[in-house]
Image 1 (cartoon, rainbow, N blue to C red):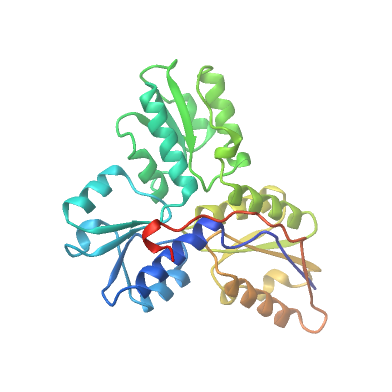
Image 2: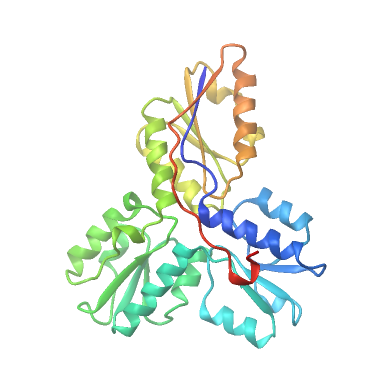
Length: 309
């Protein structure tokens, strides 16, 4: 059996940056470092940082007065920042710069008098942070069917932003529905879509062209990991989301000649390596490993000034 690895896969620049922020903050103090929400959606990453001294909380009021508090890569609302300031906490912002870019777009649109439709998944922490940038002036839609029932204050004064862990493919039908119903709506530019999400979905499409099964290593709470499963499934290739090698059912690969493997943007590479090793052990002596051509995404985000060397 052949195991084919997707490229790119796993950590994106925003995740790399967020994890390094926590690691550097921990290295610079003997005091506990608090992190609002999971820094990224991967239990193994969170557990590793917790073992090193990070304390994960859901809201700023769970951290003691004066403590250092890191905002997760998903971003926060101004309301969260106000609570942080009121409690005398010392914030470090690990928000992905691409999420920050979306927040700035929301602020610009509001200055121009637009209400804003957000395409995203209800309850996702990034969506909550972005919707909180303009409370009372934003509407959430998840799928094309939501657009028909959307009631807005002024159909001629609308903008649109998206959750960054979606892709051009994820949002195209929703954007088309929005444009059909609200012809004057200002849709996001293509470069507002997260490069990492789109690149990883394109790689899974390449996998699906040759694999009989696609395994995505990622967390159930990871939006971009779940989307990778959907991409392969929509192309007619069975796909499963797994958190680690132990999740693989040997029956899945029985009689297969080719299995594809990829990982969500918050999945560490060692988990992928363990999955590949386990697949090869199940397949026996006839197993081989190949990779799609390596793609240099060319992205690196600067650390916050207070953590730079």
